[in-house]
Each structure stands twice: as structure tokens, then as C-alpha cells.
Image (tube, rainbow, N blue to C red; front, top):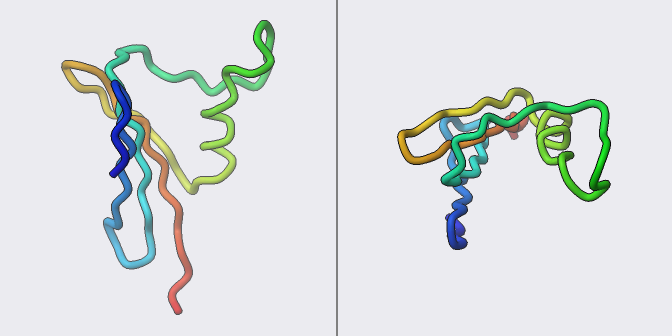
Amino acid sequence: MIHEPGVRLIVNRPTSNMVRLGVVDRSKVLPILRTEFTGNPLRGRGLLIVDSLTCRWGTEMYPWGKQVWGELWMEER
């Protein structure tokens, strides 16, 4: 687990062939998957990357913030 002020990265393995990555912060704003971009060219693309790289993703809301997570499936060896 990596901890930065206000943001936490969580990595776990719910099953032998899945890795779940989660980013926890204190914001209560739900993420929006954007496909069109205006304004700052360096912002607003994180969820598009998550959507492209993961099998599925979602958001869990907490009283104090949220967690955005994505799951990566791994092949059995």
C-alpha cells in the first residue's frame, strides 16, 4: 500500500487470477468517464486509461470520500 497525503493506493488479490487496484481519496465527487476533452489537456484522462486497461472498474463511496478501483485478470500458469 502506498500512502500520500489525502490519497491511498490499495493493491490486493481477491482470487488467484485477479489483481484489484484501488485509489482512495477524500473527494465525494463521482468520477466521469470522458470521451471528449476540452480545457486542460493534461487532466481528465485517468478514468479513460483505467477503462482501457482493466476488465472492469467501479466506485465505492464512503462517508468521508471514495475508492475508484479496477480489476486486472491474469492467466493461470
